[in-house]
Image (tube, one colour):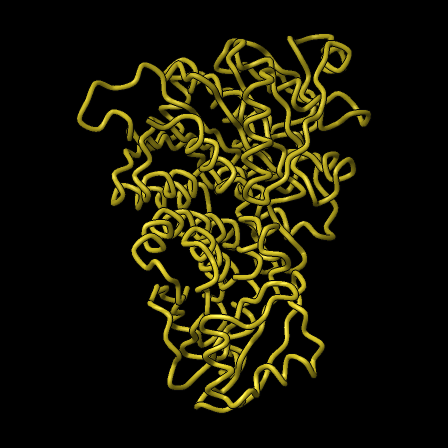
Length: 492
């Protein structure tokens, strides 16, 4: 992650200069000054490249003069149409364009302080790399950018706008690190231990092991874990930001994450091809952990609890069998038809604990729950299910604002009937039709009528291609969406 600095507009004496240019607009401010210093070379180069400043258009001019090694022009489109996500995407482009420079200056003097901060955030987010296990990478393949200076008219306001964004970026990076870790490293125990680092930010962290969970009646979660030699954990993270220095709020908001650190499918084992991807079946938990870091890092004035159920789903002589019946912490019983439908079993117990312990004003759970949601929505939207219209609308709007799209899916009695069991209160799968919906119906049976939303992020937690502000790999989908949800509606 490069260091970000905001400075008054002034031409660099050497190095790389990035110009953020609006569509069909004449060179102005620092861009015009740079053009003058290079005897018009920049204007001539842009004209030769037919650069018009259209959104996403880029061109690079090498050694135009005045000591500059290169000038990168990035089109913003029409200034009136520049959105927050558009500014961030421009920042993501910067990350790639100057990756081999030690330092670079961005001419953002034509932008507002908030827009300049968004550009800086986009650069930071796109600069993420998970390279801790590479030992033979060529030096020329490593990014070199150490410092990015953003020239803006009002430095003080830009710094103030960027400060909370830096905390959010830290949370995003934490989530991406956790989701990217190999499963032999990030076991349930290790993931729980890493949560302890949040105490440095003021988060209270409590870790429950098998003995504590057995006393609480976590038959569903422990049933998933029983086939693995790696013990399960549940982690409770509390950030009481609204209560700092005054009486605690009556009810916190709660975020719950599925944390299956590796999912073989258990006895209902998955095909071998692509099973390595199941290291990120804990992405829901990873998002909750990163979200708690972001909220605490920016000192959110809200009372928030984050809970993650961490297990490994393995086949063995002690593994749960199809046909087993388990008793959940709520007292409801479940017939396990398919051991690969394990995430909903983990969430059932953790949701019940959240309700009984914290009586939250609402709950949002996140899980890479079903392949069916990818069939329905591809990799463009997460599936959103909710029993509360206001909460669902707020989540959708927050996601749209930060570029994390969610699409609301239906719930209903007809789907609920598909998980009726002949020998228990319910079964854990309802067949192929509406698979993501019947999974949500299962989870809804454990929310006790509380305002609740379920985000199925199976298609959005990991990307097989570069995105505007995320390289290929773990996306940390949900961290920014839910931080924005809290910021806009539940702080103060």
